[in-house]
Length: 137
Image: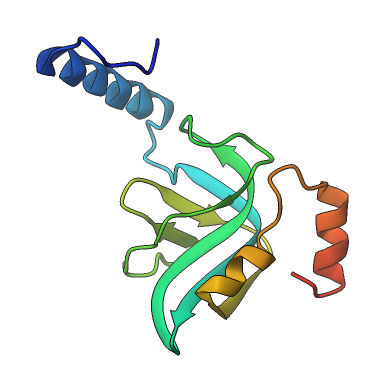
């Protein structure tokens, strides 16, 4: 279906939204986190020595929505403050839940420095693993 909604009425758009929600529920009938990350980093972003937001970034190993593909390197939108899930690392944004599996990092970093730490979406996985082993990420 085309993303162009020009010429559609409110009811048409509501029907499209409803069909998309139903499709997402069908794909995720067990209500699992929509995105699973490996080689992840939880980053508290600061500005003027004050934490302004927290994000998580890493390599997508599973995605139940059309937002990302397996192998994509992604950075979440700002995380919401939620109670921790017992035994699992699940982080929540306004629209998606991200589960982090395996080894990861937690950092506090200036907001403007984060872009230097984020990898290019087409980065080679072997190179990423070598950078992690050397402590560069």
